[in-house]
Image (tube, rainbow, N blue to C red):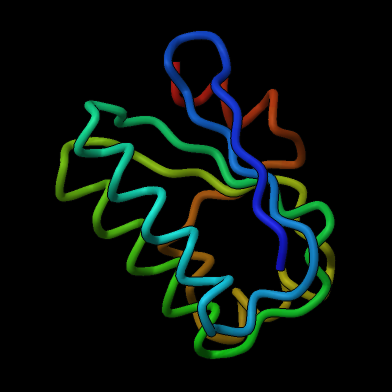
Length: 113
């Protein structure tokens, strides 16, 4: 898993994930970065998952932990560009009721503004 980060207008932090989210140190880096940014005062996050084909239970746990950390700090996190496979996984696990997903990063960012 490869993680890229940049700041959008309005103080929104965009994470682009490439590869599979299957746990381990690479995936934990997402959670670590989110926590550091929360400490630095950031509260709005978008995760672009357009290049993610597979997530396992450990990967889902990391996404949930990141979402919980952001919401406990009074912020929000949206996901964007989900593949059909990831959408199906979120439906099966009922996590589509917890994660608000959007077709594009722009739509997700507008929802946070």
